[in-house]
Amino acid sequence: MKQDYRIGFGFDVHRFSRDRLLVLGGVVIPYEFGLDGHSDADVLLHAICDAMLGALALGDIGKHFPNTSQEFKNIDSKILLAKSNDLINGKGYIVNNIDSTLVLELPRLSPYISLMQNEIASVLKIEPDRISVKATTSERLGFTGRKEGIAAFATVLLTRKES
Ligand SMILES: Nc1ccn([C@@H]2O[C@H](COP(=O)(O)O)[C@@H](O)[C@H]2O)c(=O)n1
Ligand SMILES: C[C@@]1(CO)OP(=O)(O)OP(=O)(O)OC[C@H]1O
Image (cartoon, rainbow, N blue to C red):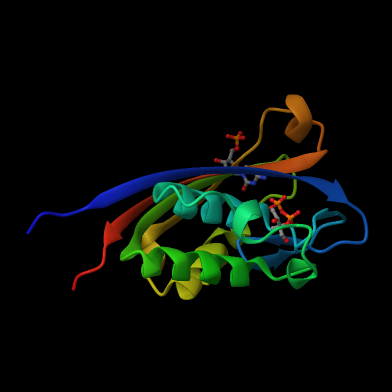
């Protein structure tokens, strides 16, 4: 049987802000700043949603979940990830695997990486070893280096559901 794959790429940035929780990959990370946004500002899940939607040329997260809508105000981005998954499932695809990178100086994310993989896998109903989450600093260069915000990159491979 011929396998049908589609690849997608996503990128997102959110600015650090006081009086907000820091939520990354569906996990609350203890830190003195959170991220600003209309939703919970989970920059990693937003990049993953964009990659999933992009793989099928379905537009982006802002098209499906507009930041002008009260429906999405302070929303848990795991709900947006589940909705993005429903959209690709509706087109006959499932996530094969994800590779992603967060760019930030602080906080150190290594203690939280496997928690994030488990959260994302649980929303997508796939095995955690299909989800890669990595972190890097930008060697104190640029806006991430100045600790003004966090950037996230994600690549997603979709495969056609067996029928
Ligand atoms: N916020 C971060 C940034 C990095 N890490 C881990 O440290 C390693 C080295 O980072 P470099 O920027 O020097 O490449 C990196 O590979 C990550 O494992 C982290 O946990 N949290
Ligand atoms: C997720 C949405 C919707 O709540 O709001 P934000 O948290 O501001 O995030 P962004 O990455 O700008 O994506 C688009 C929005 O539609």
